[in-house]
Length: 96
Image 1: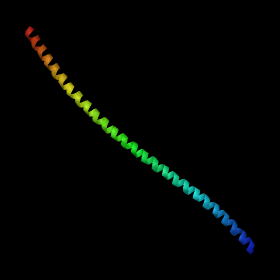
Image 2: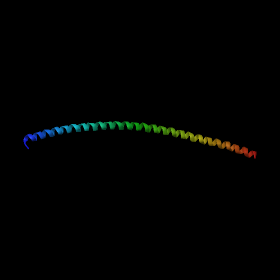
Image 3: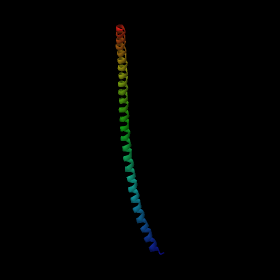
């Protein structure tokens, strides 16, 4: 191989290498942009998850309050029913 051919091959390899560098740079920039978008998405998801957890906690507190009031009202109703049936039972026995 003569000197001129070697120089042509060297120039060709340099051109190809520079093209590869450009393409690698583009891939790296795309990778960085994708990472930034993923970070932003993760931050938004974390914030949304936090809001959902707070909302769920508040809902659970409200449900606990409702269940507590319902249990109290059922106790009161049972007590009233016992009184009424006790009174009816006394009246029925008196009639017998």
